[in-house]
Every structure is written in C-alpha cells, then in structure tokens.
Image (cartoon, rainbow, N blue to C red):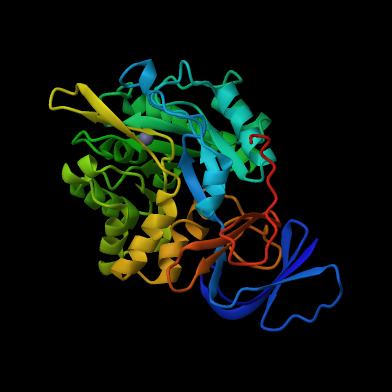
Length: 391
Ligand code: ZN
C-alpha cells in the first residue's frame, strides 16, 4: 500500500514547511517538496489546510484501568483503542497503578498485545507502584531482557501515602537492576516514578543519584505539575540533567487545590528559557484521580482521559508556546526518553505514525498508525480500517 500525503504543512515536530510525504507499507519512505510517483496503486490525499505531525507518544497510560482506592466499585475501566486514535495517540506505554494485586502484569501484557493487534504501538513497564515490585520472571532484568513489550519499570510511587515508603537503598537497587536490564536488552530501562503530593517531592531521587553511580536520567518522574513547589523542583531536576513529565489529565478539584495545569507548567518552562527538550506530557489515561480529604480519606474520583494529551498540547500553543515545542513534549521527547527510535518523528525510514490536524482549530482530522488510517473526522477521503472486533 502506497500513500502520498500532499499539500500539508509538516512539523516533524520541527517546522519543515509544505512537504509531500510518501508512505509505503508501515514506513515513511520519503519526505520532499516534490515527489514524482504515478500509478493506480498510489492513494493521494490532498491535505491542504492541515498540519501533518507525528502520532502522539503517551508515556504513561493505565491501559487495563487503575484505581480501587475507594473499594472495588472505584476500579476504572480499560482503555479503548479507538479513543486513542481519535485523540491522535499512536504509541503508548501501559503501567499498573496503586492496585498491583487484582491488576496483574500478565493482564497488562495481554492488553498491550490486544492494543497492538488493533493498530496501536503499545509497550509496557514491568514492576509496580509498591516495592518490592511485581515482575513476571524473578527479576526486573529478566523481564526487560526476555519480554519484548517491557521497556522500563514503573510507575514506582514515592512521596505518596499510597506508596510503600521506599528507602533510598531500595530505590537504588531497583534503579541499578533496571539500568543493567535496559543496557543488555537495548531498551530504555527507565524507572517511571509516580511522585505524590508529600512535601518530600523528588528528594529521594536526588539522594539516590548523589549517593550512587546511578545518573538522574535513570529516573523519569511523572505528575511533576501536581503543585507549584513540585514544578519548581522539576525545573531544578531538569537543569541538573534529568527528564520530567507533566500529567495532562486533571479535575477541577485538583486544579482548585493547587495543581498546575499541564500546559501552564510547560509555558512557565518556556518563558524561563529552560531546555524543553527533556520535558514530556503523558495522559495518565484511565487512572483513577482520587480525591482525599484533609485526613486522607477517600471522597470520590475522576478518570484520566487519553484525549487530554492533545488538548494540553493545544492549550500550550494557545498560551504562546510555539507549535514545534508544544508538539515535541508529546512526540519526539517521549520517544527519545523511551528509546523508541522509530517513533515520534516524521522522517524517511521512521514508522508511518501520522496525524493531520486542522490548521485553524488544531482538531484531529485523520490519524495513521503503521501506514494504516485508523481515524478520520470525515473531512478527508481516507478509508479507516478498524481491527477491533467489538461492535
Ligand atoms: Zn501515578
């Protein structure tokens, strides 16, 4: 199957101007101002009025659901592949959440395979919120080396009343094993760290890096926009060479209680002139967003939404962050931290994961994943293929 996308303005996510993009099979085979190709087998898409951008890479999603903090009825549902496509997401990383007893790694792995069969590019992390972490084989290294879909560990919780209150030594050992497993398997081996609301913030990560040979880049702290103090700790972490991740899903209650809207956190970094190439956004899709009172008693919950990823990219643009930088936090940057070298960029030889956005509204008009159209809003002559068997 050969597709030629014409007349779109391409952001790779770097601005490339108007380019033609040729897709052959699952890959991008050429990006050029003029591509001469003829024949009935070529599907031509006139994408005038669109931006062509990489498919979004969501580095943290609870693909089998999460939650349970308010009892069994507060367990959240699984992710639907069609929701991801409609939101411009083509690659994602699934993780367990607070509950790693009724939510299992075998189930996580099966769901990652299911989403891949449905056309997404789905990976997952071994491990769990609590330490000692769950693994399928006896160790993290074995999971990373022997199971293709496992690319890192996490999310491991710190600074949270729901965490296992890990010590620096426990985290050190975990990070060391992830590091070696990642090196031997040629994967990221990154430790995704859930940072909770406690005042300690990411001080544990700094302790580990300062008292061992583990570099800061081994850790990938998420929810760093939980409050302004954590945003500022994150900026210091960034300046010291680390990666930070802001969470796009939120609730009005969380924003009212001090959470910094994801787009605003990126805008702050941009205005301060910080290196935004080591900032990422992730959706925390299908997570429970539990609400606790002053006594840490559960009082209700919201559910993370995968659509929030693109919504916050668009919100950052509206605040004044240039489109290439706003796109990068959900495309090229997470692909780099996760070592997904085929993902997050539009270039010859990369996987054909592409999103057409309306230039005026930045709404999704069509989404292609591994060379196959998976979503259309109906405004372009693309034929969408659905591989989900659910009606
Ligand atoms: Zn989390």
